[in-house]
Length: 149
Image 1 (cartoon, rainbow, N blue to C red):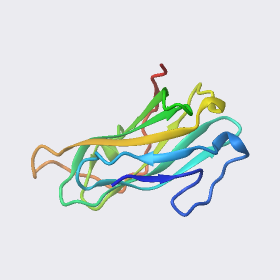
Image 2: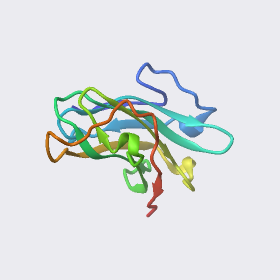
Image 3: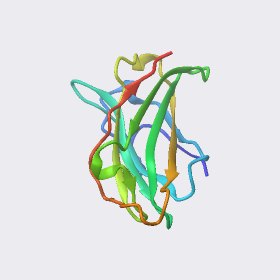
């Protein structure tokens, strides 16, 4: 299912300071079964602009290598920047069924005046065996990587 929204989180409230964060967002519908972004919010503060939110494992199986990729685009749909946040901390390497992971993707070095939309794509692998140690409800955030074009 694809959902769209403008600035702010799922309830429509935002923390932006002006037009810099007045961009449309979309969650791509090709996420692994059971993984979904349950809330998201664009933010801007003195030192950073980014997107934070929650990935929930609503399925029955644990996932490993969970990552959120955010792609920033201009008004023509051209990709300007790609950023990734991965569940890298020990507390969130495997996302158990029914658990959540808080992500925080910082848009390092992005010129937000050029950005008119973003997409969110989730990825992850089902845990290899039922005996894998699973953890969940981690609040750690991974490291954002800037792959600007």
